[in-house]
Amino acid sequence: RATNQRSITFKEACKQFIQSKHSEWTNAKHAKQWVSTLKTYAEPVLGNHAVAVIDTPLVIRVLNQDVRNKDGESEGTLWSARTSTAVRLRDRIEAVLNWAKASGYREGENPAAWKGLLENLLPNPNKIHKEKHYDAIPYSEVGDFLKTLRKRQGIASKGLEFLIMTAVRSGSL
Image (cartoon, rainbow, N blue to C red; front, side, top):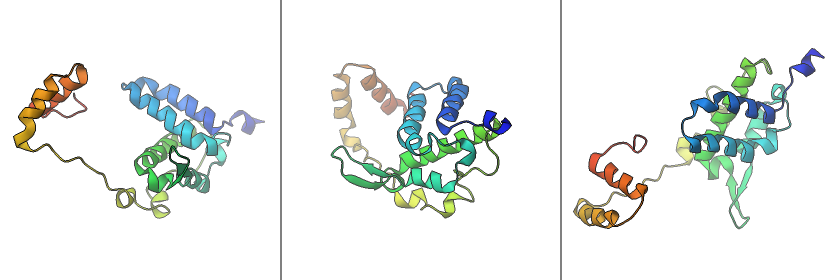
């Protein structure tokens, strides 16, 4: 009976974890991404499992699930096709399971831990997904670009101009 009272599903653990951390997240988009990635990718596989029984094969099943494009065609696994999303998702699953352990809902090692565990089972994300950066505008074209930008309405165009003129980091902007 005591075991049943200390049992919680992954879905419920996500809900409680997000409630406990929500006030730390000052960016509304960041908070929505936490909820969205867990709900979209983790809950279909882990949602109804008690956090105490979630193991490494289940976590790998989440990360290696098939993902499809808008036309319904397979893009490959989440880990290989949407690596950035998969890495964030793994971090989030690990955080939820750490919360569950700290809250007394599970014991033992975290099956979503990268160091010493998943790093040995999954390809290194830096080697399968190369970050693609956009080319900079040639210096000779910046003046014309700023003239065009100043004709636009809205805060985004003003923010981009400020960023160009001051080289402030986009997060600070």
